[in-house]
Length: 296
Ligand code: PDD
Image (cartoon, rainbow, N blue to C red; front, side):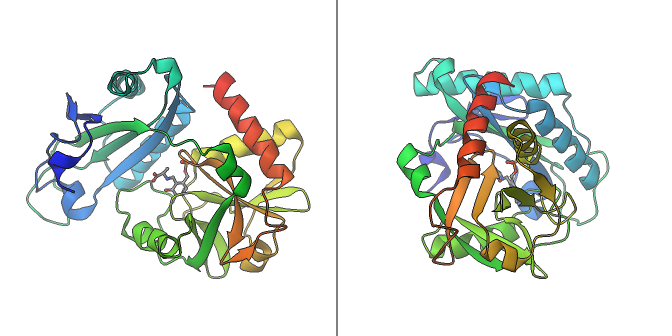
């Protein structure tokens, strides 16, 4: 695929609106050269960004870790998301209320001659685009998805939502090669996360997930699932989860901005629990749909 054959989806680059097919960045952009940038993926339902403040707080944390200044305040990002959401509705020929979208926001350190050290005084590159948010059809959800396991060979700053994603790309391809949906990774025998999602284990009615530390990206759905569990009276515990516990789980769930919450029903070709999405999944999925409708 060449740039000109990309879809005409709306995008924004350094203050200008355009389309994916026409927007251009410098070959010396540090995002291109080093993956020296950070990003967010914000789901937008019927024009309302979901958990926007949480996404912005994480963007600020990523910027701080990367020693980058965030060039926009919350209102600036909110306006950009609203403009892209509106542009997508027009692109799709739909009313904004009838769309589900994902807005991708990216900041790179900017353009400079190649040098690993951070060049002082350069302007960050701000890029954003919008696309439809894939909503899993009911039949697909009822099946759940297949995953494979792999060693977590990524770096030890997985808590930064960095555009340096070579490790995630290599990890994801392991499942793609098997026709599976996600790669679930383990570091030193303990669950970390998926290549682009968080992973949850249900055992005896308790939802377990890895601690909020540097080995996982703290997905915005960490907070959402914790809240949904509290509302549903389901115990929710963050602690190290061993590989054996994952393999013996009653249910395994994935969460992300784009997957929402989905059941993993086959792991390395074997059924998880009884091989069907379980009752905790159903509860959390329904809670998530309700949260989308009522709480921005
Ligand atoms: N990925 N862990 C990793 C490594 C991720 O890349 C993601 C999200 C998550 C889930 O985070 P959240 O709930 O905030 O979406 C966990 C996004 C969707 C992506 O890269 O496309």
